[in-house]
Picture 1 (cartoon, one colour):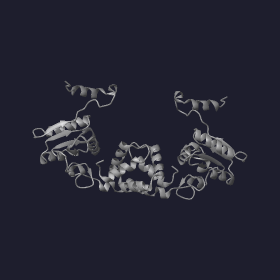
Picture 2 (cartoon, one colour):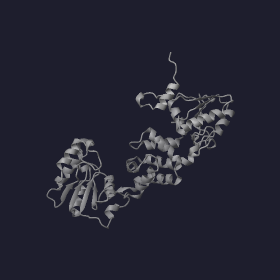
Picture 3 (cartoon, helix red, strand yellow):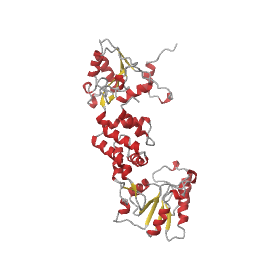
Picture 4 (cartoon, helix red, strand yellow):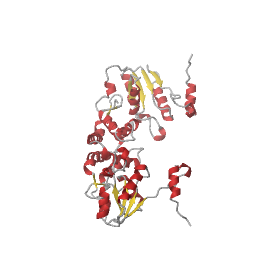
Length: 200
Length: 200
């Protein structure tokens, strides 16, 4: 494009993000010209240092810029005998935003998917089992998505935990709140029916 | 959010762009962790320098990192007696991508809109008139959007050019190519009907 080089650089960089196409990248690149200098400075610094600064928590594999993440270091009210097992870091944030969970987490960094060449040893399952033993975990909540990979991972982990003194549960799947029933797919409806609860 | 600071900084910066909300900003910030170091380096540098590097072309007001933009400096095949008048820099790019226009441009940086407090002296109209006189312009093509502001601006400029030895035209408005006729609004249809061309 016939923009000056620095604008073309920005367009190319924005295009590297999935979900950002040519048009959006152009719009975003041009709008940097209207941004505060301070924001651009912070943005620039953060991009330069993000990969150097961010590590994984030694204990739970969540994102951190120290040895342990803020959640593992939190000494106030967390129940450190419960682990919620999730696929990726942003699900931890989802749970934290919800606010109703006060245990710890374990980030698997993927789900078992033999077709994609992802085997149990490629994700953080060994470290999970080790933690459960070492930290006297009382309950493991499997909170992965209800897909073939999710179910495979849930099944695999629960098999490994058989015979150990730990309660294994998985989050409920069913009809989400605030949605029109007619838009629910049949698989979800089937799960919702199967897991029905008595109301009397 | 309970992310490390550098991730929160990135989320806040992405949220400054119009059209990027909380969820998207979070996704984009996290995906920087998977990007090439080189891309992040270029991105960081470009953000830091973009506002310092980018100026407006002394002649046409398009974006440039030099005195004159690449289009004004282009000495190959441009017809320097035709000016296409546009609202903002990215419309220049749109025309250049199309490839069928070989004249010069003039970027107004806005349209006349008294309701929003934008008067003729707030946009690049004076410099346009000066150029037309000084550069012996033969034709001025007004290519602004068909809105109240666009029509006001078109009318205002064409009034100013009355009596000067220059052809003033405006781009055609009508039904765009490749669209289902049923989705056309009545104003567009009215313009398309009014500007109908003989086919025989």
